[in-house]
Length: 406
Ligand SMILES: [Zn+2]
Image 1 (cartoon, rainbow, N blue to C red):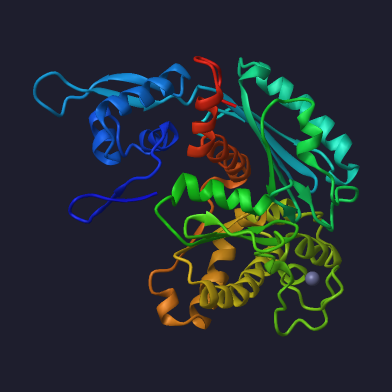
Image 2 (image 1 turned 180 degrees about the vertical axis):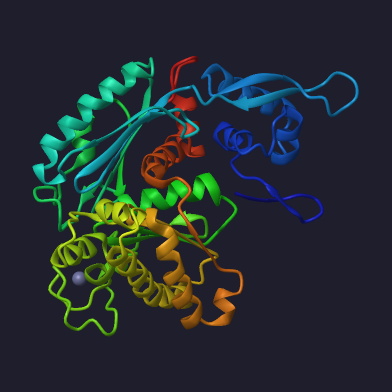
């Protein structure tokens, strides 16, 4: 999309179709026909034609006049969030959250329920589908309104095919095509990603959109990291980027991880490991949530363990900071709810062991979305896909006037 004007300056250029204009309107960068003409360098008649196509598909509406200029105020254009919905599921090991969201990633109806991912893909997805039907009804929307489906799973995913890849805690899911399963039920694209990636996306979209480089650390039963690099999710060659849970923490040679190695971060500082250690000390705890409850109730053993876990995390994050130079690290996941204790240890070690240039403007903060980060991020993933400029342009080219964009 490079085009140069008479002064040799770059301008939004390109093939500037209706899809690119929708993008400018959604971002609030150009919200009148005149601004669109200025930004794109296209003739006003061409702009008018493309805006009409977006209005015909209910993606854009006329939101009244602008006050800013003299004479007849130009009509403001706005993106129509209600031009469809997306269905999203953030599936954890034992606990899941599902939502139906509008096209601005606002949940219209949502629910959180326990389901064991180890039941296998068919039973779990049947369960998900049943709840999607109920959520659509609750939101007053129809199956025909569904523009896309997004699913987060607790394991590595081949993003382009939507198939989990050797996920350690998801028996039966290896190579299972989640999009194929949904294809019979919805005439809409289905995207599948690792749960930490969608959480990173949700937090980035909601609170750090101007931040190019961000790490999202999920501390639940296990530990994982979602990487936003240059404003986009970095998944790596095999979808395994950010698997920091199995980086070794020095000084824990007696700790054996389920992966077979020793001293892994997850086995030292994960919520599952802390709960097991507390149980060994005679304090009842089964998972990360129980550990957080104990910390909130003032249990000293639990509080000490979470602070130590923060230090172990800080050791590993210091290396990540030196390597990746993020501007922001967001701490989330079930154990992340005990962030007062965790953050102290994380900050102490990260700043002690990272190079000053990398920590100069570094911020380490708790997740603001909490356990909703996943569903919001899954919605963002799907929305950015279905509203991508080339997808919109294709739909308008082949579609008939007034037909919904698919
Ligand atoms: Zn390990």
